[in-house]
Amino acid sequence: MEQNKKLSTTMSLVKVFTVAMIAALVISMGGSYIIANYIGLTLLNNPATWQIIVFTAAIVLCCIGAIISMVLVLKVMGNISKGNIYGQANTNLLSKMSTVMFAICGICVVSGIIVWPTIILIGFIALYLGAIIKAVELCFIRANSMKEELDMTV
Image (cartoon, rainbow, N blue to C red):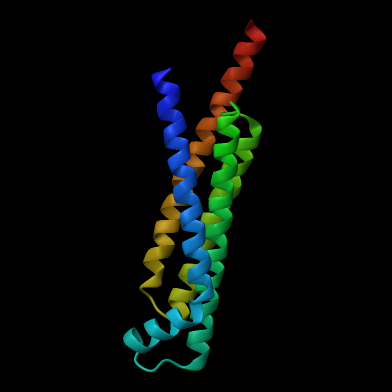
């Protein structure tokens, strides 16, 4: 009973923080041109217009990817709250999440090469998160196959 209460509390907190993060990402996406201009003027010393445009596009694309990942997290949490923890649905959602993280990594690396090299660090963080999510996905696949084997045994 105590464990169910902890799980419920944790899931509620994750949902609240995920929704808050989505809101922050939407605001960041809306202000991406301002953010790109600020970073450009303070760090790139009078950047060209094309650099601001590329950087703005990178911010928008990364925010869209992060929002997609957050929505997938909410779907995974919904499945877990329904008792479907290691099912194929969560495995597919985790696969999509890792793919999105790898895409964000690519966007950051490309824009870092073109405009501002420091953004490559964000790409490495996205790569690391994608690898962790992929590892969890593989654990889910293994757990699902073990569950199926156990169901056949009984």
